Length: 375
Image (cartoon, rainbow, N blue to C red; front, side):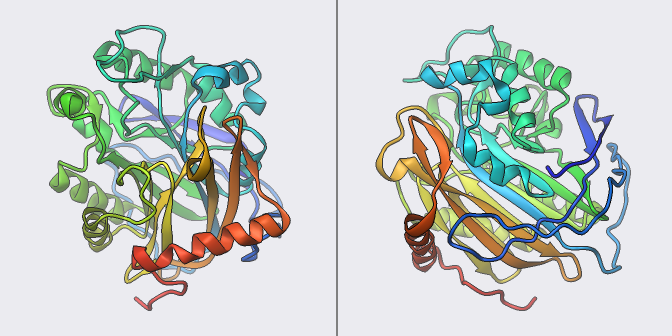
């Protein structure tokens, strides 16, 4: 998040929302990863605070361009846990690319709890409450926890995680005390535009899918298996916001190309009213670009994780500039990231040029384009 002062309100009885944002980060489409910025605003502007049940139709008036930044899966397992002793540096140097945008979003792959019993699976992740401090210090404005590790310590761990979210006042989507809570969007105001963020997961350990899926009777994750509810959430957000963003945890492990299921789901979400669709979950980068009706980045890769090697140690920060007349993505920047010891570092120079070229080459099997299709 760019500089500014935060305002906080309670929406839906749990998540703290509302933030004010200052400045405009306009990024040239550059392979060097330098993140050149051009400031426009001279001071902080107050945020609008959205509450459940309120209806505020998006304006048709021309809006100032805004920047949205996204990174992939991150966790604090193993040796990375020690980094939380200094939350301001916990996400490593590549986090600077997130902080330059008006709004930024990541996928936190862990339960945030000290209680509960590990789920019956090969690895169970958890982190202390300082994880939310680390996200805030890195400039992350909203986090999805809809993934295959967010409930690694069961319903007991989930209830504790939700309490820690409340205490931290950090906006989290995709998980909740019931399905209504898990599918509820977070709506933030950047400049004079309202941006809605929704999240869901396609990936579950099959033996845990029932216990982890949010319903009217239990807390859990927003699941893409409840497609009707996910599409309804997008349509409802469309009526309230100028921009609708959906972040999904999906994809086949280690595949650089989206599956047919991913592409079908993307089409349905865009048809329902999403403008930007981003995802992670395959563990590697998948293609990103324009499709009719919006912009899709199928796979952001792994942003921070212990033991990541090879293709799994390469990811990036995606920054989109949107002009709100026509809800159009007007420029795209991919800043390549390399994990060193599990910690994200921005790639520079010739290596960055090559990494951007590799990212662009993934458009082919993703079925996306380098330039926009008119709406």
